Amino acid sequence: MNAPHRLRLDSAALVANWRALAALSGTACGAAIKANGYGLGATEVARRLAEAGCRDFFVATWAEAEALAPLGLPVAVLHGVRAEDMARARGGFAWPVLNTDQQVARWRGSGGGRCDVMVDTGMNRLGITPAAISDGTLDGLEVGTLMSHLASADEDSPLNARQLAAFAALAGTHPAERMSLANSAAIGIGRAYAFDLTRPGLALYGGVPRAELSDVLRQVVTPEAQILQRRRLQPGDVIGYNALFTAERPTEVAILNLGYADGYWRGFSQRGSAYAGDAWLPVLGRVSMDLTAICVDAAPDLAEGDWVAIDYALPQASALSGMSQYELLTGMGARYDRVWTA
Image (cartoon, rainbow, N blue to C red; front, side, top):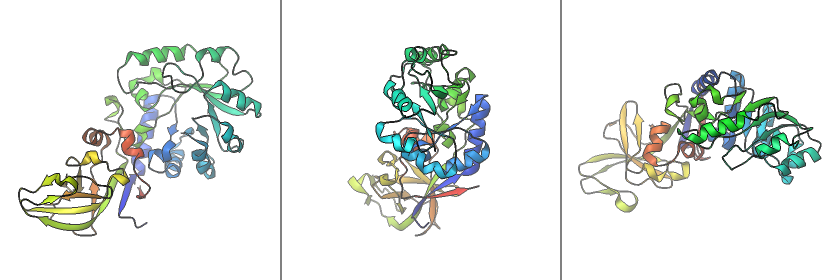
């Protein structure tokens, strides 16, 4: 591991977040680890959460599920099963969340077996209709969990209560052993949304989808970047593309091996910052594809080859950059070394 930038990943914070969300849920608590564990590394995330007691894992595709197969964990594939997926789907390392009547028929026609089912309660994205739940469409299937997904759980929308009522009305009308509605944000709304299983994603990784969760979640990921060059600007000197920054006084600058190709977005231009210990180091000028400049007046001892920590608390970084917390996590590129700490 010798990349010039790395993600410092806090195992204890990840596990603490899952335990806090499980306590708030008051029921079984799973983990959404799609998109490579929201950018952190799905295998390492899953291993740590399984050791902590998590027993339900969710990915988006069969390729994601197959990558986790060596761990032998219970994994559900949220996007269901296409005709192209059938060879993998019959491999036994995961099961589908069926989303359409065609997927239901395809799974039944292939011999069936364990599955989950998504029902659409108002988001109009994935899921079979509520009517299909009670008209016999699922007869004969081995359905573990009936689930739905809220469209606006991160805000106080009347749609939340409407979807809750629509989902609760399905109790007793289906063969599933469990019901599951709540994502990270819905856990923050209250236990009425928890049912038998919650499915947090963002909040596991330190994202804060609702203010109610802000005091219970810990930051998991901190990007760190190495200094490629240190230089001094004189008054009137500019730096970076489009000369966005002009020095008004002598200014010490460090150039970091970090840019939007690594998910450190252009929205952090003139807004982001880094730290060296307690020294605050603001971004100067435009963030480019591979390089970012920071002012290091407050850290006179920093030199070429030294490392700085990027200020990346997700709610605040989202407000600064204009990117959602989800984008900030999942956009972190493959070029980082991912370094887990206890």
